[in-house]
Image (cartoon, rainbow, N blue to C red; front, side, top):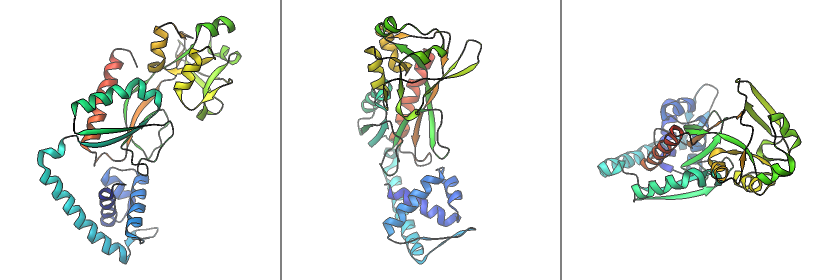
Length: 301
């Protein structure tokens, strides 16, 4: 937990008398402000605010803590000034989380470029498909592929994830090739665990949207597992194009339903605050954005 930021959040709440106003001033989500305040109260070992329906006010412990936080922030701000130009140089540890498939396809090359360009940095990369609490798990950047971001998240769209329906030649030889999305109901479709009863969504050549319920004998919470199962003839998979494209090019998977376009999703970088973004995080986001934009121009998303 960043105690300097927690102190800054507490001071902003005290000065503005409102958590909503503090969130707006700091360009943070309301949820992040609440968590920083809770951390500050845990650190102080006391309740710092009286909460009423109209306005927040300081407790006695809050008055003492406010004075101490202001002194601490003065020292922190003096430290930033003392660092001079060096303060804008990316340095230190950057903790990133994303799925294994996205890391292999997109992130690892970006991390290599980042570490070569900024030798005073380090990266801790954690593979996970679940939504994490960035503050509690001390994550600087989470990469997600989704179209349903929670409204209180601070996110930057980095690119677009196009998908493809695909299967191995052996599977299609045994079970036939679907000609339209409705045919998928008769096939073994490999599905993503978190979606429950999966609905695969498409747009046809006339721009009409349609959703098709699918099911099969294998579900997983990681794209990479479903991709390998499809490659081995286990069924039909809906996969990110960045994962499936090399196997399709090699003939180990066949792209299906050419007249129908699967729903695209956004690729987002999620972090805790725009206002207090470390130079290392800003540099990594810029590298990722440049890479995704370049791929999109070349039609590789």
